[in-house]
Image 1 (cartoon, rainbow, N blue to C red):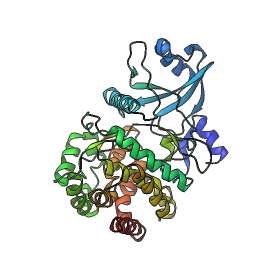
Image 2: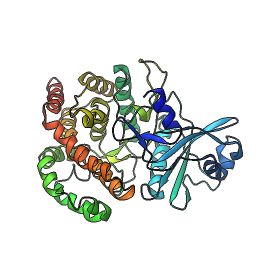
Image 3: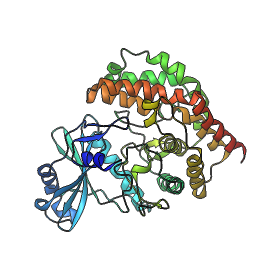
Image 4: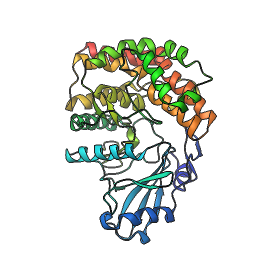
Length: 394
């Protein structure tokens, strides 16, 4: 991002959109008075000075919540606000339990702070807040749009190693998968032996999603673009052991050891899309979001995968956690449909929560359909062929 865009995002006005252009935020920016009121409940445990001294030093440009770095005289914290229509308090506490579990196993996540009652979730009306200690490392990609490719192959390789370490640490986290919601990642459909039935159950359980797709040919589109791929992927995933994953592994959800191209991962951020899926599925999410420049799709009508970055990330991952033949085949099979369940949750979010028909249309046509369709086209086929050759070379 250029300096002008960074200034706009940090001012709390314009934020990252669904493409390369900045746009109006879905949610109002945090204010100093607001964060001081929240942090007033953390005086005993925050250890960062009085809330009266708190002042926002940076607003995050991420669009689907409001967050900021808040400075005290002797330290800083990260404050994030969600609307209850997007994140229920109970779900947020699950994220915090997962973060605690991972930290206990050596993962470099910021500590989630508890308020004076020990609760990590503060609610005020329709908004809930969480407060984290400052992240370790350099937030190198903090002003870069999500899903933007890695700046170097070394970054991709280190991200692969870090993801494998994350999966090892997360392997035995015991909580079940979270219930479907807006902005939620899952494998309820793509790992199902009855994907059409699972889709029908999802829509029935989510009235807002049903309204959002009421004028769409959802079942026909699903059968046309997704069903064949799921019928290949589901039995392969069924042979694997489910586990919790990050759900949104890309460069801007990581911190780094330096600003340079040889930097390595220093910390892990944002468990908002974490869920009980499969390690291979989570790796597929990371590849899809980090090695295909989707932000160019709307602008140019075509994107290509960075095959060198694909290999770098997979090489890094396998340095820590080698993939067997079943896992490699499952990775290739699930990759074309790895985005579909999150895309449906985005459709619901844009149509029913923030009332953005244009973004709801983009989420349906560009993401729910467009991502999977891309894998059937020439550029996507190149990526699939590359991964299949990699699997055969084993």
